[in-house]
Length: 613
Image 1 (tube, rainbow, N blue to C red):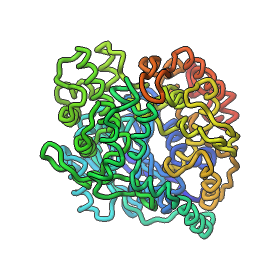
Image 2: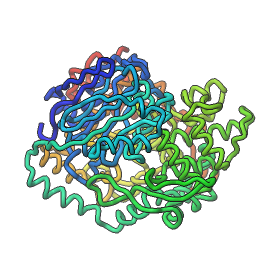
Image 3: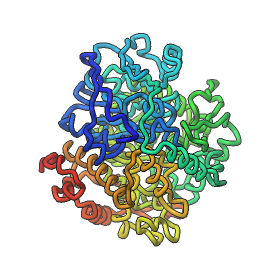
Image 4: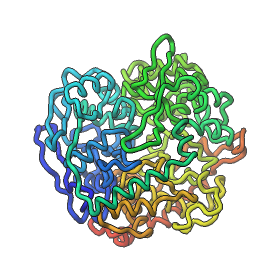
């Protein structure tokens, strides 16, 4: 297929052997892009019962048809493998520059198997993979690691793990360009278990295009879609811009999701960050929006450096409102430490808020009090180094909470919740509960997006939806999950794929797909690709033992919020169960996942028999 090299480089760390892995043409036509191909590849190569931290797990770095082309929104890639949190396959998307280089490497991705005898790093340059000793890098943070490796390989882009990954902390992530995290599933711990310190990529290979001239013309037109004042403002203030308005709506997770309003929201919001500690803005390859925060400040007499970027919305909420912390400088320091240690900021924030509540309830006697900014910063180091109470949560917050008998652990399938309140976004609550990868806000729709008169006419969504309702949501949740699954398979930035309203841009995306690949897609074919690739993740989850019985929300959400515009709303377990059952029917799933009839309808006959019922 045009727009791909048709192969991955396959690295066995145990033997040191590097070979090519040819992608079947049927997979390319059926699953299309990086997310679909990566999930199908892992379905082929894994049994589903592997220990995620064993040599038998496989880690995949994947691109789609747009990586390496300079298209706005395509400066991303995917990392996928068995998650230590869920013990099922999960992926993480990350921006910056690494994905662009991988898209020009001569390969569509990297497959990493086995376990090296000692620390190594992988260099992929000029289409040639090679392993090098990383003994001198082990024990170093991601910042120092990148400095050393870019000096050795000047044109390379680096993905590395820090102390947390080396110590197999479940919330460890993979850091790119010092400030871009492939977070959430804990895949940094998978790299650590494999003794893989880093991957360095530089590329000079060009993919074939079906119509290069048309693509270049349409790429320019596509970029112009993002020159409006709204996107300029978004670039100026970043994802943090919405923090204070979410608090006003009662949707800002506060005090471990006990509330949705934070009285000090303005102290940590986008405007305050912009006016005080912002030192610059960063962006991904090909993107003029430049929404990435770059900050400089001090906390506790220590410098927060611009090279580690700056806190985005999720981080500001996780270390801010969720912990009742209104100290912006401490949040910036927490963000820097997480980037250097290689820790997911959402997971760390949820874990620390849990510990604060546990201390308040007398379940632990650690001096961890609500709003204690110094304790937050200190706990991040303790988690990375597995010291004291940090070691207790390093092997999984859900497991630790279960041992304690605490019912206020905000996780789903072992994954900490992102900073979005489902009692005021109840369709998102369905996605939270049913997601094969655990709690995620990046796979579907946010109900606040569906308030317009005609959200998405092309998709048949022609009337607004009540964000406090579950009853009319299962079908529309499924539809938008499939739409997002399609763009995630292309590995396009969620902030540039406009799913609703007058700016809905999927027709332009499909035209770009045709210019690159030569494959013209109808709206229905686009949705079918999304449904097919979502089904792959559900097959992985089913093979790992998950059923509908595991689809649930934390108990806390059955109690109503008390303040703000969302006050009085909750999600009852009975109503949620009814909505989940309707959602499964809409997907053509039984309680285990896709039925044989659904797999045949999706053209996935080669996946029949994967689920043991």
